[in-house]
Length: 218
Image (cartoon, rainbow, N blue to C red):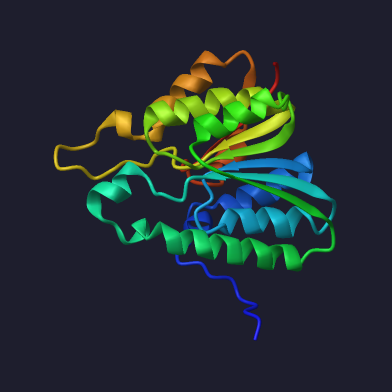
């Protein structure tokens, strides 16, 4: 018998209030081309499919290694069973696609984000996406790279969302700012301050765990 239920083991997407922020954001942005960096089990991916493809055809690009981050590998976290995570991702997105009436062009890029984003740029997708969501590596250098490259892929008027803005890793010696997204996100928004606008209302809906910016200039 066909399994008709989603398989999610984490509720991060709901816990940080992202669903409320996206509900508000999508009602005005009406994105049809979406890029997601870091997909895990596909909770936010399924939301995108169900919410957007119920109204229009969409194109959705998903980037993930399904290998886990350094924090998972070092600690032997239960999250680190990434083969099962990837399997759940495919089950969940296929189920979401079966529930909607419009076409979903789904492109899965399995690999590290710097290589995958560079490939998209090389394919001529500058200014292509309406909405990009960064929820991959928590390491500041990686987050900064994702932000800068995603900004090139984002169209003018599009929105770039960052997850885990205040995330920090419990280490024996305290918090290492290089192993947190905040330093990179702050650096990006400061450097690109003349080319973006912080969407404070959407960001506030996630209790500062996420940050959303609109691209105002190329």
